[in-house]
Length: 248
Image (cartoon, rainbow, N blue to C red; front, side, top):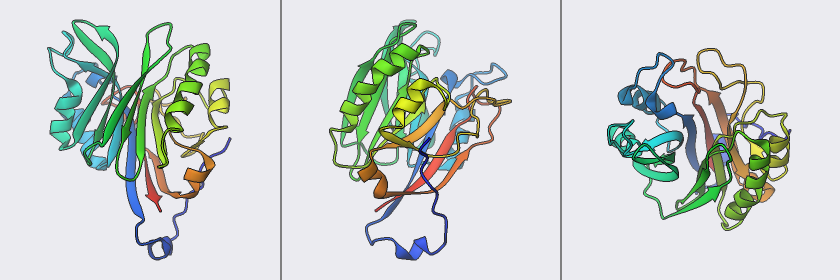
């Protein structure tokens, strides 16, 4: 599998172009704020996020004004607690409101596009947000391999619209050796180590959460300075993942 190599030598701090920018990209399936102890806790999730100080955070399993969330728009609440902009994309109608994915960002979005993705157990969505120097996409793919495969042309169409580095992250519901991921890496470079697991949070034994970049040309403009699966065993059933990238 094609994984982005890390460049961590200190000399990089002095050799990059004047306009290079470092961006922290994080992804977290928050299970709608329900931890492994089954407690619902907004502040605990916000504390995990704030400890990492990401520039952009892709969120999965997020309620918006449902009865389950007592009418709270979860993305907006987390955005307030983390002092970030919040963007939501609904996948399905649920419990009097909506359920889907989201994104938090330090920078105000320039544009937002939402795509419907297939999912026979439940419909899925792709949230694409454009910023000045890059584009970020959040998603939570289907449990069914055929639906994940059918999502690929939509992901590629969304990514090909931009002349900026296009990052995508989320819960892909597939391990690195599964067919949908081997197809995915023909077009996207995945950050990190396939051996580092992300689920379940208390004792991870599979990797289903990813951060990736579209296309070889864009990847040449981006260096990954680090990648981590955050040791957070309680706030959700997934562990968050984060990478710092340098965009030339």
